[in-house]
Image 1 (spheres, one colour):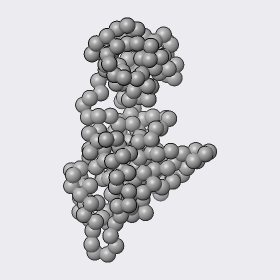
Image 2 (tube, rainbow, N blue to C red):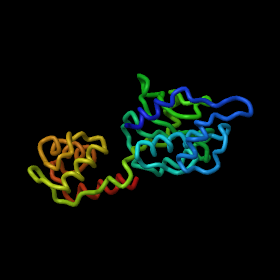
Image 3 (cartoon, rainbow, N blue to C red):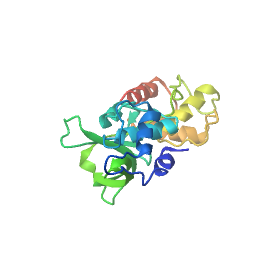
Image 4 (tube, rainbow, N blue to C red):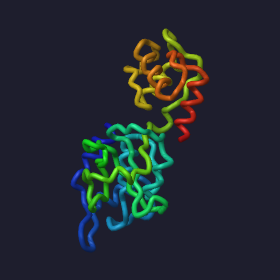
Length: 219
């Protein structure tokens, strides 16, 4: 089950006014292992994102702080639905922020639509000023993303090719089925990755490509 489906299943969950608490919001913290969220009055946007990520078996920040997500996954410039989006709040240099799941832009990309928790005290889709985005992040399955070793090229087969295909798909370069067969789709996806990162565009996975991949994954 993907991130957006899990997050969307919670649409409409909202805080209960007064002294009562919505047990589902408290549950987000309990099941995410986040300490300190004992009622629905405490900011819970990051707690919600952690809960969804854990349900999906993906990386999580383990923190109730929205900006903790700027260190999780990899930074992406061209977000896709389901990517994490982190915003600054009040001041770009403050500790305050907001985090949710990217769902799209408006026509001129000035508004970022975000499916998240603690948005007007509820789980909903809300538009935010794109100028307040700190980072778009793409998270992966826990302990399943490995960096393949070079050199790999067309007609190669095996586990290292599987690693490459998983990596390309994760980075947004669709190479089709992860089957361990370095065919034309994998080659074309790799060429596009190389072109977008100012590398030699030859469709061969070399040390040059490896170094760029490592840099991206550490960003």
